[in-house]
Image (cartoon, helix red, strand yellow):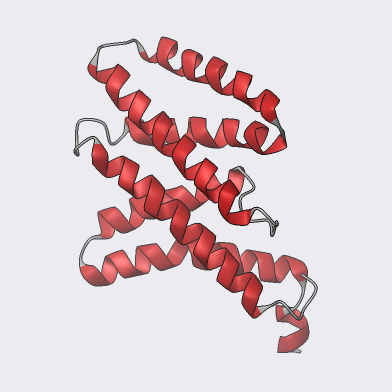
Length: 161
């Protein structure tokens, strides 16, 4: 029964998403840095919205594009907030720029809402940590998400998920 249950595509997907979100929180809790564990677990939410978890022949290239776009939106948000740009203008400008890049293809179209979500997450971090720290969180979080999913699909390669 367990084998049939774990091989069910919906159960397998839910288990994968739960683990990729909860493991950073558990590690942060064990290390006494729950704040960083929770921040780190926000990045897989962005990656999931962008659809970066689908097995693809350009899997790691897509992850690099996603991580760089998340980090760029985070950096722009922090720098423009430091220059006292009003938040509605900042987010409208990001939306317009990302909307133009969405014309490049379906990957970039999926990255638009995920990058805006990364910019919104950055709003809570601006001024509370150095500018480079959210960039590092987005880069390492996307790397974690990609490696975890790659490993997951490698483990379950014999089963049609």
